[in-house]
Length: 399
Image 1 (cartoon, rainbow, N blue to C red):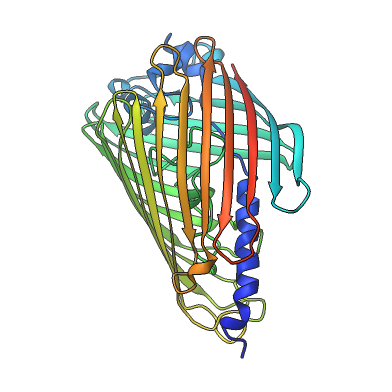
Image 2: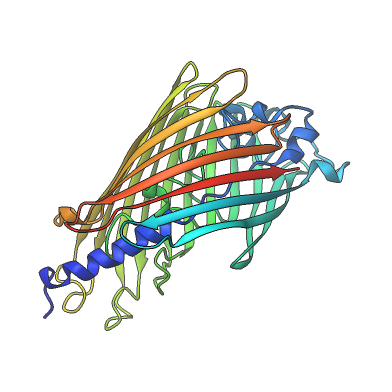
């Protein structure tokens, strides 16, 4: 039998590979200028400090099925196509390098170009469709929703492809201000099950209390593998709660996820393992200064032992602390984060520390152009492991 000690190097390599992949995965922004046109308002009406981060009104608008909560139950007719359609292009220079090695990315690219169709339909329904062209092909994110109730208290059901949990069930810090999302939400927090909150399909049912507290329970039909393997989930369930405590969208969000996975071990492909993740994010604004943080705990169970795993249970965690400052007159925002991923609490030298620093400047009105610069540095605790760092310079143009 292969022991855990004998596999420490391969586990390290796998997790380092995951960190490398995730470091090169910019986060997409989902701001729809069509709604600014429809309601004759600036993007700051729903976003603070800059898109795609949502303020309290923006979250309420999203929770109500892409309509103002006071319009629930009122007929929404499509009178202007421009109120429902928008487009976005992203232009990016990326430089990433592992210490002691040549740069693995030094390029100017157009990582994505998207067309959006979204908004409220009729009295109760709403929808969202994004077609995104990227170097990997054409991708689709979609949502169909139904909403009922009153302005202050309403329920809803959503069928979602792509962003069921991250950017869907958990508010706030999963919508990163810069290209990189915190590792706790985009990446694996254990060395066994490569689960991330970023990309899921499924359905959820929710109720919103007093326009500031959303409680949801959902079913996820698939688990997107982070490491590119064959791991799939089936019959996964989750529960989440989002509570907003200020007009800028600051608040507390929690999520619990329970799922299953097969294909973790090439010799035991059919053995079904189980796992759960518990996460929380919180942020608060002190004037134009923001403090934020998040934590995700993961436990993998019923792992196939005897080949890759010497134990049937592995636990891991990931967390971050961050801060930002916004200049009121220009909405120019500077931010930073300190992140840690510890994928096996019994093997502490597998952990990774990440530092992120950046700035975002919205240009023009209503913020159709956005310029951002972000730097990251990854330090692995494992003795002799190389550090990794990179810079993203990004221009987004939306209309």
